[in-house]
Image 1 (cartoon, rainbow, N blue to C red):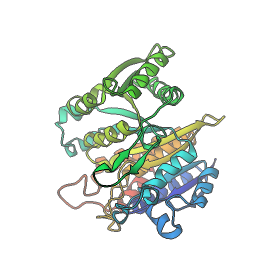
Image 2: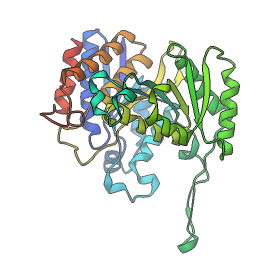
Image 3: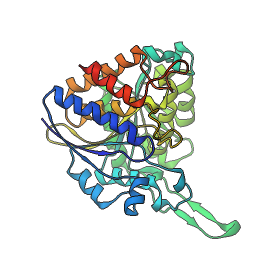
Length: 361
């Protein structure tokens, strides 16, 4: 199979973890005799430095012509006080919108070998296996009007949370479809007790659920969901929610996995005739500039994102399963980075990447 893949290393540790993700992808392509056509582009702070914009036109062109994109983190402290259009995160929002990837899938899994890495008690974490399905191209991050106006005590900031029924339906449909082969349970998360936006969300999801009579649906307010993720995370299978709530809740899920460096994600949109999805794949963590360039970062979230890419954008189930099995084998071997090994000698970013390749065989 021909795999046309764009790599966007981004900023900080994004460069290091993306390098190991690409290493694993190249290894898989060689083992299964696929032709990997790999290109690289600029996104985020590095793109601002080199082109003056966080999402250059050349990157947009490369992303549009690729079958899938693997991405590192974006963001640098030097841009913290920059206007929104000159911040690295604007590039992230831009590429999501350009590719039309409207659903972000964030699996949260407690590996048996890493139970002790979670600050939660073992009996709460053991057996956790959920997917957080976050709507990605609507809500308060994209809504208008937005901005800051006025001066002095009258300075005013406005952001708009907005959704249409069709935007809610398409991401909810994906959640129900994902639940089918799993435990057949969807938990829809909103704030319908105070937000009209959430009232439309709840009504739309409820009506759509009638098309999936074998899937159990329950609703939960977002503040309660945040609490239940800590008190009883095993109750969840598929968690469906809007953009901002999903951003926050999925990072909370990192507590269960033991490290935010463990969490992959897949942002998917239109489905091709082959059944494969247009996809943007990235680890959940940030750019961590304090450890950038030190070969310390955990690359398993990025490598797990490669497994998702193989599964969703290329329909290569065997190859995806091999990567996931190799990640588990490396975790069991104890050859992990410092975030997962508080005592003893940790492995480097590169050593973990090479260990995953060796485990694949």
